[in-house]
Length: 212
Length: 329
Image 1 (cartoon, chains in turn red, purple):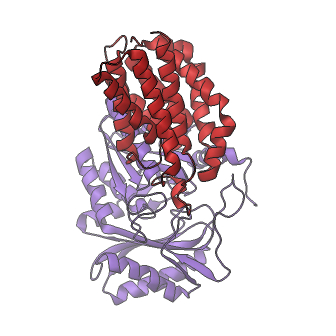
Image 2 (cartoon, chains in turn blue, red):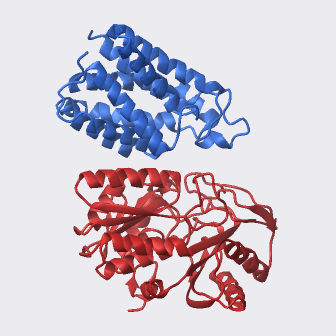
Image 3 (cartoon, helix red, strand yellow):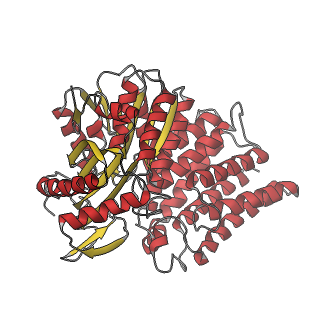
């Protein structure tokens, strides 16, 4: 596995496509428990990254992550903007001097993002948030590395873990955000933030797997 | 909805533009929605900010003796870190910058990330968190107590301390002392209307008020029938006294309007609060009555007390000149 800035930007474009294709689905999920702006805000962030993609490809990895973080926090706004932005900036620090990421580096990056989101958002797994897609993906990544799995299989298991994690938010009670104030605390509804996190992890795994 | 606006999306930027035109020492920086002093202070910089809708907070407190820059978010939502970083840069004279943050989860996340990034840029930054509202321990938008009108005193004390030439740690310590000694309690009589929504954000009955309601319409302690000014003064100050011992001390008093309550009624409330304070042997050194931390066009008021020692009294009475507050000079 060898992920350089060029490949990472290819992933961003793929994630943008996947997000764009699911406008109605994600917005409907959000309207059930939140204020319905999650898709629009996230899409705005990825659209901006798409606009910047030629410039982004030329940046060293750490500068790329920093730039993605700054762009996301400025364009997505709200809690999602600062959580994604902070996660990318924190992960970027791990990439100083690296020209490309190995499988271990990518796991470390995802782990660092998870840590940052948990600390900044004062949230843990089980709170019905994006963490519920990211955390199981990081677990699967670590397990795959320890088992010396084939890299393609490893990426497949990370993707499935993220998707299953997002699906599992359906039965969770919200602890953070607007759904907390509903009588059912959002039980029975998927968390849109977990769903869009799973889209991103899925696009990342697919993009990298195609190069193997 | 009847409002003097052009478009809901332009409310924040046009507010700040108008503010800067009324105060020639201030500069409006578009897009990032920052109001900053045109000339840097050469001292520790003080930056505050938060969601819009609380005018004159926070931009109205930029000026000599108070804030160096204020950063506005959209209505009732935190500014993003890129905006805050610009505020920090504008306030930085190379002596460091103190951020005054109200205790709301969104504000804390955004200001703390801005602080981390500004440090990466080599600017020395620290922050304090204001949590003066004694109404509720946790709320819709906060873990722990909310920051409300007492924030005005924290701006004043921090700005006055910075003006003495104190270093960042000393300015922070003074701000922390103000925070430790300030308590607020409010009530609402009618909801506010966000320009983009166009209708009131909650309903109160014709003769109903809500004690302890937050400055974004978050739930308070309980609803009650309309009370006389005398009863209301007692209700609000009882919460303050139950939380902090102000007896036989000297204090600063702020009787704050939430936006739609006439100043006349605030003066009536002020007279009743003074009466109560006198009966408890509390000496009022300085009183402010007016709209200092509003909630758009919410009707209602809050009462803030800050217990003073020699240092806080001196810093409170030091001159300041801002659109929202002028003392001495």
